[in-house]
Image 1 (cartoon, rainbow, N blue to C red):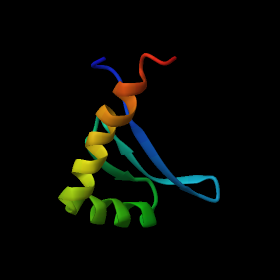
Image 2 (cartoon, one colour):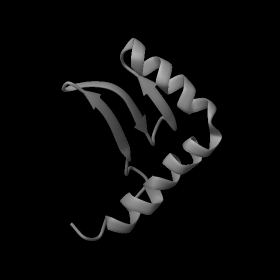
Image 3 (tube, one colour):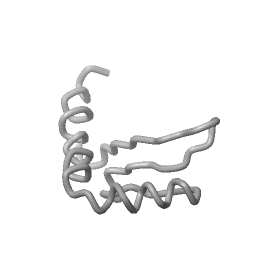
Image 4 (cartoon, rainbow, N blue to C red):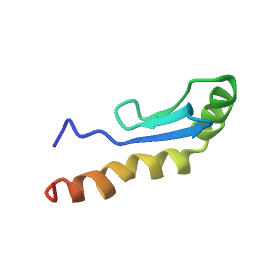
Length: 66
């Protein structure tokens, strides 16, 4: 269960511009637009805490289903 990873990708026109990765613990931007948004989202501790909690809430509760 330690190697389970939660990824939330944000795309526009089939191009990923930002992503939250539970292994990194914060948002990462891949374009100039994504970098600006990632910086803004990473400053908000409530967003980061909610995204980190998604690993336990979504991944760990559904691991036994498949």
